[in-house]
Image (cartoon, one colour):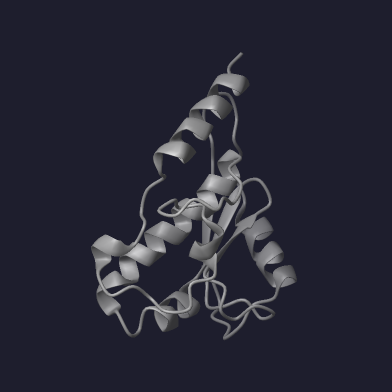
Length: 139
């Protein structure tokens, strides 16, 4: 994809539509992950969901966010992707500390120092919510 310093929502949608060739069907789900530099209107945003089939990760924003703690960069990238995937699966934000879908995860101002401190998995509450969603879907 062509590099742009900042990308608008419209450009993200155009890029994703031009590359969206596989579709979910039957028991196979297709989720696209689109890497772009940063969001024009929200330059500090680390990630976003894209309709019901995609995730956007803002690579330059993630790099800037973790520049004070570079050992955590890959952990924050994975955490952001999984958080956005949680939205794709039907999870909403919550206020439980230690949970991936906690609203404070998206509002972090400073990267944590240790990779082990970055939340990289759903908490038990979220796993139970996912199980409930799965059971509702498979009735």
